[in-house]
Image 1 (tube, one colour):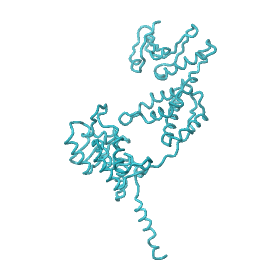
Image 2 (cartoon, rainbow, N blue to C red):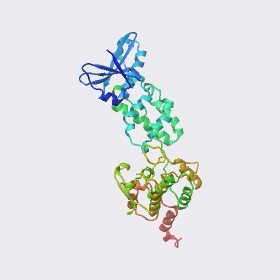
Image 3 (cartoon, helix red, strand yellow):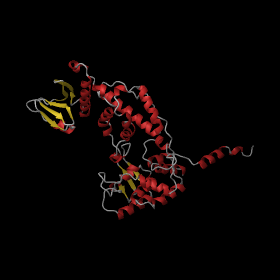
Image 4 (cartoon, rainbow, N blue to C red):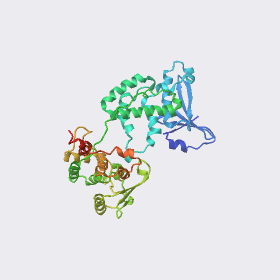
Length: 399
């Protein structure tokens, strides 16, 4: 039976139409992976190889139940297993594809079937994939899953703790999630236990940094001096609107009513999948009017001047770092120096300190729950001192 060589993709496999006889396709990236297409239209993956002149064949699964990624993994593992098998004639009955499954292959299954379907800001690589590539893949990516037990997992994570709670917790999340995925959905791999399920996340540092009025004045002055004023405007609007940085960057002119001073953030761009109307301060309107006058036609308020498939400005961290250094706010301790998200916290805190009702501030932040707004509520030390003094004022003349 002749074989047709093709670079297997999901789109290709879906497009193949049946003929009057069985047609066999072979994957150019894995010569032992075959696709059988029957006249009935049924399509199934098979492993085929010759061992000591004998043809070895094993069905890996129908395309409805077996993804292309899994089929490639199974074919690779079948090949490794058949080279290790002492009794070739019993290969069909004793094959254990999970025996040579690696941590990298577990993650690849999780990435293709789960992680790739999660949206990220400006199409960036998902944070869990970044954590895996940096902190897992170089260390244990090539390890066989069959050789990983709970003691191994514990020893591995003892080392990640030295990298800080953020790295440690992301690595915990990605490994737990990847193994839970194959346990729940990849039955052919016969993975029954998650060796990382008992690993706990580290307690994070509670972040409550916001800008004082003096710090904000220094920062705004520094933003006037940075080279990229487009990015500087993004940070200015983040402070004056309290909006998330991603929403500011994706701001569209069609969503802004300059005459009424209202910015509509569409549901497609919000965490809660609800649309929000944000009233705009005069400081914001002045920036928008100036941008409208000076810039070329674009649907984005902050269009990218470089080639970008998104059309709007992404990134901006170097400008932020430049600005906080000019403002004298930079600190080696990341929990002390301000971050861009602290502009949103500042927006909320200043309103609450001025006496605004928390329910109103919650609406300004586009929160659906007051519980979320309370995270941003920080009271000045002087206010606490005045409150304490007021509580014991009646005792001043009695002691």
